[in-house]
Image: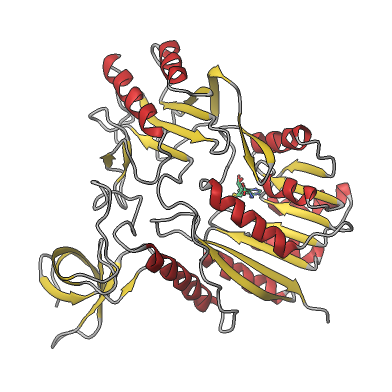
Length: 453
Ligand SMILES: C[S@@+](CC[C@H](N)C(=O)[O-])C[C@H]1O[C@@H](n2cnc3c(N)ncnc32)[C@H](O)[C@@H]1O
């Protein structure tokens, strides 16, 4: 029987979906008992201390590395071992890309027997400083950072390896401001304290920066001074976001501009986009351009095509499809601010063949009926939970020739692909994209085509 604090000699042979090293331990009593080890990678031989046991598996930490994996590198971050952000920072990048492809294979295998072999993972052009957005909680010591793995304990770090190189100076300035003005950090347990998070977003191609102080109240003391300090650091917009809810929702619904423009502007694939702080925007800008170009190449849009872009955000894919020559593009998205941005983005780019609707994707059929123009191509890019069965059914009832499915969760994508295949769609390709280097997340783009019967 394996117990807490046991020290076991293990060989790491695999990686879990959460990015933990996996070993199988056998002795007289147990055969192939699974042990997940933090920060261990395939090829490592280690002494492992068991920290938690469950009925069929256990968790461990590295006590000593006896033999290093050939893929091991030293992690260029002092908080890597504790932080919940990165899991592959101690591994050669090529090995990470292959693991992500394997994640996709495993996810599809859980849902179906036959599927196309996923293509090699498209590497990210940048593996450091690629994140154009961070949301950093303030610790009780008045330092910004990130949450520890699987917890809401703060790991103080103002210089995350993944975040844009400009963010560090905003973080340090905000820390000095909070200290100097005696502003209390928010405490999640008792709901007291004011400053919750510092949310930063940068438009990579224009350099514009949005700073947002998330507070448990309406007003930040000395907020004009805060705005002035952020402006001096180069902020384009400074907002106060009011979040007085308990629980762990990060952003409240109310944003109040205290300096600069309502929206920062970026460009992607040569199109201009204005972005509200409440709207979704892909976090790895260079790789997003690769992802969008690939998705549009699969859509292969012609001049007679009507395209539906479901979960369209600020209209990025929609407007690129419209520019690619579609007869008409319809974008549907649930966040009103994002649809406001999408409409404005069509206007500032002089694009007239795109229309946008603020609605739940499940209402797709009613919207299409209202505005006419049955789509022959549907592009979907849902959140991690994937399509609802209602939405999958609505897409299938539209009977488009092609469905391009962009996903940040291969597990739900594979589940939805089964649903769509029941309506007569087959797979052509599965292509993983590394949008989130050094983390366990992977993006995939899949083309499904209607089988003529
Ligand atoms: C992964 S993002 C993709 C956005 C966009 N395609 C892009 O690349 O920027 C998913 C989007 O779906 C939206 N969303 C979430 N649930 C939705 C729903 N039920 N109906 C419509 N849109 C939804 C989110 O607000 C978010 O903008």
